[in-house]
Image (cartoon, rainbow, N blue to C red; front, side, top):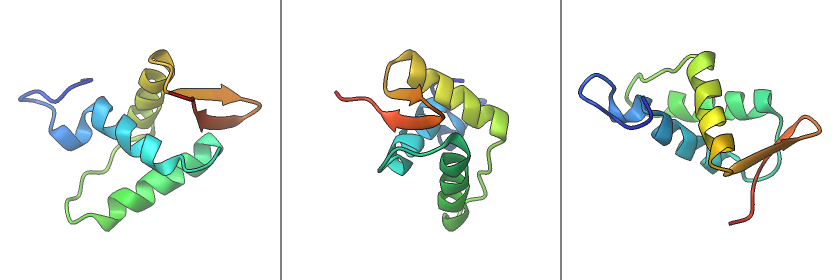
Amino acid sequence: MILPTKHIRPERALLTIGAEVLGCLREPMTVSRVWDELRKRRGETSEPSAITYDWFILALDLLFIVKAVDFDSGVLRKTAP
């Protein structure tokens, strides 16, 4: 689930989705804006690898647990390394 396995393709692993989320966070954004950006990015690729909103939230949870993002006042932002 977090890492790709023989049942979870690499583009659906939470680590991959989390990396894409970090790529979308060029500036602080709301969760819904990040979701829209991610869906737009994934729509531009040649592979149909749509994810559900639940899977997106799990990726956000993973990023929050490892302190890669912070959520404050309704805005999601990258944390300083």
